[in-house]
Image 1 (cartoon, rainbow, N blue to C red):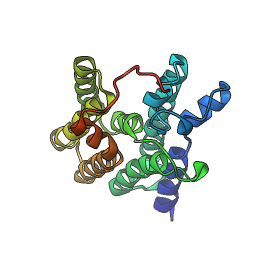
Image 2 (image 1 turned 135 degrees about the vertical axis):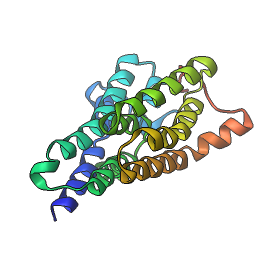
Image 3 (image 1 turned 90 degrees about the vertical axis):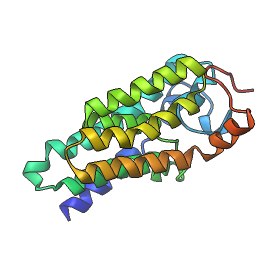
Image 4 (image 1 turned 180 degrees about the vertical axis):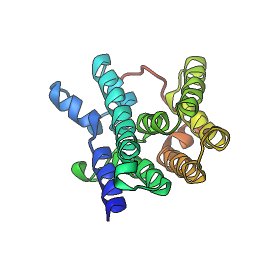
Length: 201
């Protein structure tokens, strides 16, 4: 029961969509109503409000980190096993992607996934962030940077994470992030993907 509650709690934490929360707090339009319709930092940036985009990015990353950190912090006291930690990592991302508080319409999970990685293994997270930065500055396309960093994450986890269950969790997270980027992949292949900083009409 404790393992189930930990996983369910992580899903609920993930369901806090900071793109929607920040936009509403700042008197902005719902990010699901413009641009790509994705409630994430990149789409919020298309509104032209950089502070809102930064707050969204930090909030989404923080909730991913917090859910896993809490599980790890209370692991000895609650008797949580490492498989539960892996489930918590996946659950908080699932909450972000399909949030119960926002009609199951969530973001694509990149920032939240990075937060999860920092809680599980900061070296893996830093490698993925470095890959994202290189790709983003080189090509100015956020989705391409995210896709490449996502593909790198399971490989880095395989070499640097201490538990097999955690490596599998990162692999599942990578698959989910790639799945949520399927429209971006189509746009990239057709040359129609927007670049970082492009404003929504």
